[in-house]
Length: 367
Ligand code: SF4
Image 1 (cartoon, rainbow, N blue to C red):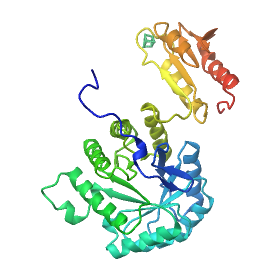
Image 2: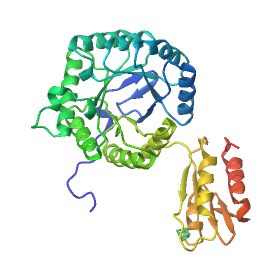
Image 3: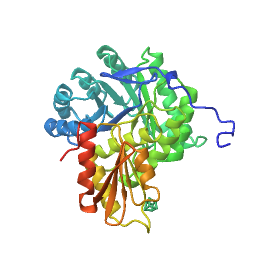
């Protein structure tokens, strides 16, 4: 059969240690946490907090904020104080920024030990995080590998990422700091899969943060992240995800939730079942489906909504869903709870569907 290739079943997620980013548990069997990163200047805490609020609204659970220079530290502190989500300080190059972020309320740090300058400086960061009681994500990236590892011609890219990551993990653990999450990122899907499989096998207790980085615009980035994260999450690998997209970060959160929903790990909000349409369809189903998607944004009820083009599969899918419509000629059949509620003219279909959802599932769609 399909799984008859001797492949092992999913790794139990409980193999990893659990860390806490503010109130959010990561690893140890906790739900795979969704994170994203703000792209506003951290020096502008009002703009950054507005973006954090928008991310929280979409279901983001952990937010990362860049601390690129000392003049961003005060803004970072304000964001930490007001943010509804735990805030991770993203630090590169200057370890003093990490110490400053600890003092200003960071819920976690993200550093790449390879670009901090020396082990002594990395140790200063580890000690500060230890005192603050916050975890550190060790973020290794193909674009900023330790030059000594990067230069090795005997290693493939995944091997370089793994080598680098393992040396950092050993260092942190050797210093008595187990409160780590590890990420090893590249823009390549096969490298992402191989690297994380290897990490999971070699250091099975370290929680992994997954993501395909520098993945491009919404369409390509969605595909790359879905393929890589879909494979890894289905194998039980990965404790938190960040989907990188060159687009407003709310998109990252929507895609991340869609991935978690697709692999059956988590569920948030409605799922739309809509057909691709074909020559049988006699209503503007594509327009209708995108309007339904738009109007369902922000609805948290985990309902299934079918938006189907005709009577071939429409009534069946709509009856199996919580609610749905099946298109006819200039009209559509509204079906809820498995029962037909009758035909509605095409011009009224969207409103009739949304009114019925509102009536049945309480929290109601937005205007
Ligand atoms: Fe075509 Fe009808 Fe199937 Fe939609 S439900 S793809 S319109 S046959």
